[in-house]
Amino acid sequence: MRSMPDHRHKAVHYHFKRYGVGLLFMLPWIIGFCVFVAIPIGWSMFMSLHKVAVVPGGFKYTWLGLQNYRDAFLKDNVFPIELITYFQEMILMVPVIVIFALLISLLLNQRFPGRFIYRALFFLPVIFATGQVLSELFTQGAGDVPFLEQYNLEPIVRQYVGGELAKTVMEVLGRVVLILWYSGVQILIFIAGFQTISPSVYEAVRIDGASPWESFWKITLPASVPFISLNVLYTIIDLFTFPLNPVLKHIKDNMFKVDTGYGYASALAWIYFGFIFVLLALVLGLFSRSMRLKGGKS
Amino acid sequence: MKPELWVHRARNYAAGLLWSRKAQKYKMVVLGRNLSDGLLAKMVIYALLSIVAYLYLQPLLYMISTMLKTVSDLLDPSVKWIPRVVSWENLTKAYKGLQYPEALRNTTLIALSCSLVQVLVCSMTGYALARLAVPFKGLITALVLLTFLIPPQVIIIPLYVIFSKMGLLNTLFVFLVPAIFGQGLKGALFILIFRQFFKAQPPSLEEAAKLDGASAVRLYFRIMLPLAQSACLVVFLFSFIWYWNMYYEPSMFLAKGFTPLSIRLDRLEDVLNPSLLGSKSLVANPVTEGTKMAAAFLIILPPLVIFMFLQRWFITGIERTGIVE
Image (cartoon, rainbow over all chains, first blue to last red; front, side, top):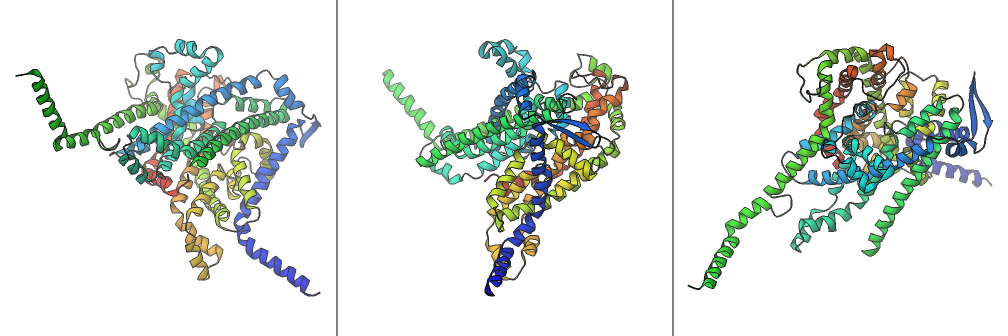
């Protein structure tokens, strides 16, 4: 009879010894997660199901159910359009950024004197391409490419793309340089990724008679598929907080309107998050499938 | 002589020239064995990179050029890049409008303290996730990823209420406290970086230290953290820059009193023309354009200087850390 508590004591002691240090190291994060992430998430979901009014000394909640979510699509005549436009832009911007980063990092990966200077140059925008400075530059119309006006590309784009989409394309082209400023981190990820491909592979294919062009398509590109997927994901997440994002502005505006308030703004934010989450899941699924296919073949 | 013979001879001669060693050598110099070795390829690379770099940095040049123009130069369409008279008036105006020394102190305080705390806390969390026994490790790692994915807009209102209940609004602590608890700006990304780094280290070091009787805490601070120097530097610099540039969070939490540079840039228009208060137009106002560019320049100047000194470590550090594996 006596051995039972003793045994349990030993088990507790064992578990403490096993997990104690790990928990000690994790403790700050766990507390922080509960207070600054879990509670706000739950609260914001709760708010999105209510009409929230600010009264002295706190909030007054009126149960609405899913009314806020329904209103976002049925009553609000700005939000769905902005959401769709922004997603159109994003679907254009992500490939532009990732492909640009891939090309530049391929060039920067070559050995030539002075490449450190160029690497520094292309990393420079990471330092200031955020927040207010960027939106000031946007406002003043800096960052368009000169040949856009010189060669009068707009009718051409309109002819080939047509209609509403042409407007989006032109908008993206109009500030393409500033959009490319979002590729600093991606370039670094690609360069670091190229270092993981062993040089002996290149040597082997060269001896087999492959041209540099072939060795790019057969070796560099397949080996960097994981980094491409990483970069696509990073770019999508990075564009959440794009300073001129009209959706975020709309959410912020609704937050301080009396008739809509926090509840409605929370519902909008959750819808926005839901859309992005679906996009991320799609990208992840696509890439992991292609990687699995490749793994299956070899 | 028959013409066929001439052709034959000429062909022989040409073939001999082509296959002579000297020609081979020239060909090697110009074209190279690899795509990247030859002179030709190098020139193409330089040209391409220079053109793209020019386009890439054009907005920065625009900022500097606009900053140094007077109003009349700004309105004159014939003045494109180089101002007729270099005027420092915009800089002094922006300096005053931002209340630069005070705002610089605030921003530096936030960025420096938060990023130092973040290095310590995120490295500890990353180490625990990589090496120590933690219950529900898989779930916790997934939650770390989740915190990276949630846009700040979703949780900003409850956070605002929590911070105001704690009495942290409009102080430094509104950013420092979450950083202490591992929820600083992009903290999840840094945790994952450290986790990746510690996972890549050989376990024999820890085993040796454990055999010598070092406790886990001592092992961490004496061996693992110094080992992670390059990762620490990368995380510190990124964290510093992101805290320096953040706009959305301070626009909610630091609305008055303790305001950083980015908020003051946003308000500069109102400070310069009190008469236009509230009418925020998206059209550039030519009178204040130069001053705003000067203010933007003043904001990016300190991180720019820091980056110039540290850039080599920064970039090689990222390569060495193996963030991407």
